[in-house]
Image (cartoon, rainbow, N blue to C red; front, top):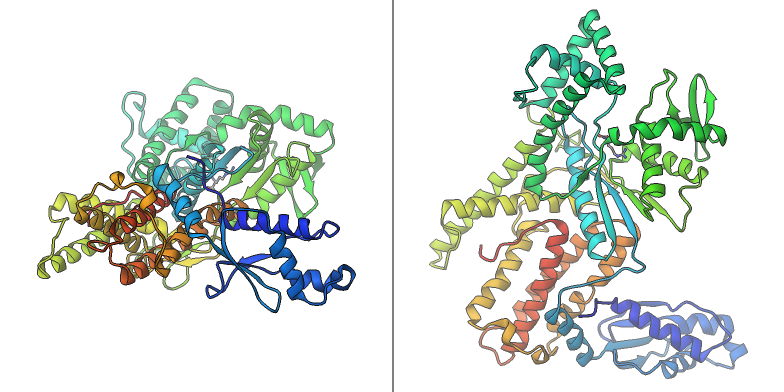
Length: 585
Ligand code: ARG
């Protein structure tokens, strides 16, 4: 099946052609907006502008006449059903019912597809926690947002590499290695059971600060690690392994598929790169450090080499962007971190431009920054006792609360004498895992990415509000209607679909907006376009149910098809956001 195209884009193209046909000497972009439903689905606003700027020259005496000329110049097409011209000069079009049914038929017959051309090679740098340190709420945001943007880009046809830029290198490893030597002398055979990696890190830091002898040994261990000494290397690998186990538990729960390519991967690339940048005078010495000055940030330069001669976070990101743009030949890189790092990434992009690796518009680099998660007190999100929130605890609580929501629903269903599905405790638990985690993700992604947001369990799990719970119910309701109909939906020919009632039409138009949502996300990397869309889609679906009976109505076949098309768009959107829906709730 052919991928879906933007409806608004297609109508815009028709008007662009009409303008060109009607007024070959004028260049004007087609101005198309969603119309007042009384007159049509879309409205072209060019006539007024053409009249104002060129009316007399072209021999028109009113915007109305210009509008009529535009209408008459529209190329033959199957999209537009009715056209009307208003005295002020608006040209309103209503899409043809046959065309709408045919478009929905594409959704019914194939997969929901959308293509963004030309195909690009994209690197999405996300999650990226630090070894032996706690993976905090900021990393959770990066993981959730990054995974969804990776999925969206892949769905749109791009070749996407999701990279986990794990903080697995740096001077802190000296103290960790030394600590490991002391505390787990036989770590080679037995991996330490480090349940709380933060404690491990803290303990080694304490030793470092308190014991001068330990400090010297730790510094020696760093040198040893850099030089590839066997002991240091093995200890480092073990430390990474322990951390990785903890990260992977979170990734498995969230269904994250990312490739680990940590800071250490780039370490060997830094010295020759710095030499080259020095030779090309892109790097300059300043107060003992090797710096790159970038035009937009005058206060601090990027440090290719720190004043102590070591390589830091900046050095690694320089090597990483070089590797991604120059070696991997990526066309587009997206970095997903908190907004606190915005300046850092803009300096990296500037430096890459100076070096000639980043050449917009042929290459695109985005910092997909996000705000801070806050508690009700508007301060950084903490537990009641003031500690940082452990991610596993957070997910567990979401699941626990989702379970309560499910069991009270089941109780209600039983009280009402209706059919209850999730009666078995294990089934309830599985469903709660899916809903609870989806609720956390949805609540995060529906926010404007760049603003801070207040974490709120009640809103996150509100079955009637804009939450994943509401969406899950909407999906299950379609499934329930399909089951109750007793009909195999696949056996209904797509040609049975007819768009008659206004709420059916609203639903179809909403479904066909899906490509516009993808386009919007590709343009500004705001995932809330998709969550807003889902909320609107489910509300439009509810309005349709209120007015249109499905089962037993003479339009049953057509309406079952419409429900199925909606289900497919919902399912695709759920997959992009990382949710697995439930058929029965
Ligand atoms: N590890 C870093 C942190 O926790 C995030 C890394 C983001 N990616 C990058 N290429 N610098 O803040």
